[in-house]
Amino acid sequence: MKVKIENPVRTTSIALRALIATLVPQFAFGLSYTWIALSPHAQQEGWSPVVVGAIFALTPLSSAITLLVGSRLPTILPLRRLCWVGVSLLVAGLAVAFLFPNEFTFLVFFAMLALGVGYGITLLASLAAIAQVFPGRIGTAEGMLTAAYSFAAIAEVPVIGLLIPGHAWIDALRIAGTIVTVLAVIALTFMPSLPPSHEDAPGEMVPLHLLKRPRLGTTVLLVVSVAPLGTYATSQVGIYAQHLGLTAVIATAAVVVVALGNTLGRLIGGMASDYFGVNRVLLVIVLMDVLAGVTLWRASIAPVLLVASSVVGLACGGLIGVVPPLAKDAAPRTFNTASSLLFAGFALGGFLGPLIGSGLGGGATAWLVLGVLTLIGLVIIVLHLAQSNRQSRQPRKHADELTSSIHAPTKRSIKK
Image (cartoon, rainbow, N blue to C red; front, side, top):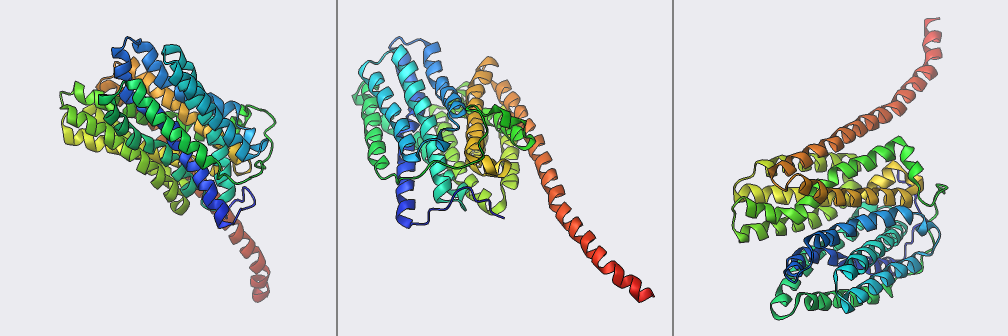
């Protein structure tokens, strides 16, 4: 039985406009991935390694806080207006950072305001819009949305690499950032007028009390425990390859396959959840993550490293791809709020992954610990599957008892 989240908007033109307006801005917010390629150049100019690392870490942290604090916004404001708020913060933050590039402006305006808060608000509005336009294919449509964000790592990082030899790193970022931001603004003009989402009011602006619901609370814990391995791999697998004594080509290839796997995983995870059920897909994702973590712990040769990197990318991408279907499954009557909690959980895991890994020295032990952490998610999904099986048997048992009670008098009359 399909849960109706919104009155479906069936006009094809409106659906296409909503897709353009929500997908294209994701490329602009994906500028956060370019910091992986730009950070060494910033350090060469004297930027503190602590600040450089904080710029990368504060983006998911600030987006997680935004998703929590702003989770009720899609139920209050029209979705087109909310999208404009998010993209306006992107424009303002990038403008300040590009005009006055220094450690402070990149921390506050680039990482936190533009790519953190701006992204969080735009994601909230985009998820709600997709749920209205494609209520029966939430996994597929929102898998495309999240895949567009991660595709920036594949498309924009190489562009930055091509620009840097002829430009200063900040100029390369200005060129790429300006192009994708202008495209985001143009795409947003296609956004149809969609009303605020309707759902059971959770009663608080920060609806942490929803975590008391067993299904939703354990699902958030699952996401937080599984996400760190993938986000750690995104930023560290290339460095790990160099520590193993592998060539620079292999290190670059490892980063690329993680990014490719991440993008494909988001798309495939969302689509598969629509057809096979979110719990089954999530079980495969968690198993892949555990396997990848253990394999990277023992990796010593290039083929093993590359295969494990692709698997961890697929698992990480698949996890975020199934977040909207997870929200629909765990809390269908508060879909938007549940989605924000789960995405905040993923962003928190994205912040914790590099933090835990660096705290463990960034070596082989980090992969083992983060892989073992994923086992928490494995236990939770197994319990969810067992609960779902029990619930599916209960209606059948009730039907059997009803049938038995209906036919019981007939059997007694035959005996008479």
